[in-house]
Image (cartoon, rainbow, N blue to C red; front, side, top):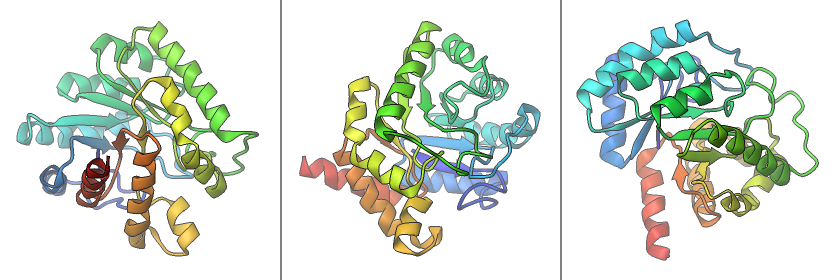
Length: 256
């Protein structure tokens, strides 16, 4: 899953792809490099970010999404949003799935929207909201608590008619560095949920804080964590650098 952040304030690549021409070029590059999904984010969810209103998000998203669908009509576009109005508009336009960092908790209409459109839905764990999530994240047993939370939301989603679920443990979303590594070490326990597991660790602080570097210098560390994620049950990697991630997947597949 290639990341296409089109918000000026997005983590790592904010402002790089916030025009139609730049978004088209980056999407073409990621598809050429082997991306299966393109995940479009018009709202920043980096630590400290406020929630974005649907109207503001739509103003950023729709012109670029329309151009992408026109240019790449066979591509699966995922929309990274927690607003049901945004999800509905994007799905009507031709998007294929929704990736929701809040697992339906920010907008109570999200589950109904997904069920009505019968599309895949990424249900992610987050402690708090982007604005507050990294202030003081606390768990007694992070993997067990996240697993129970995901079970609860899977039950709520399926009760409303959602059938195609993907789970994301939410690395970096209300977790310390130590929490993130315990969660990655124990990732395989989430395979009991019988849903594909999406892992998003690309260039995150859990890498560059350990290596004492920066997001710009965290590609090698990202690749290492991608390999360990695949070994522990990940089905989808959400990445900034598609070529390197696809090579990691191909080599891991050969190893099997």
